[in-house]
Image (cartoon, rainbow, N blue to C red; front, side, top):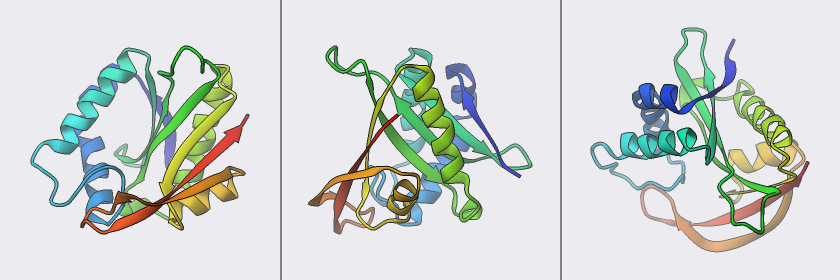
Length: 172
């Protein structure tokens, strides 16, 4: 059984290598999450070090799924550092589930924890984007997220081919 919980900035920094392993696995598995193949040495660790600093600064909330051995096998972030005219909004970022832990409901559980935190923080509008037609898009649609639209050729897959991105939103 996996456990879903929020990490603070200090623990996120201590667990950078585990977080980097999940990111590395997802990118090597073909997920378009902002990184290209081959991953530069230290690039995933640098990303998570910066994310941990954002968690410590209160700009991001980081949720993880831990397997029964206590290892991180999934992540999801709530980015709350918004412009002054959007105090009610937050972005959802970096839904990552290691390939060894997929098809176990982890993504849905991470999303529910994130939505609960957003409510606690008074955030009533959440926004995210994902590859059109991806497994992640099906997770969001099952969870009641609404499709705002697609942008063809918005990003690149890790190997370099263009992909369409779909934007979703949810009012809490």
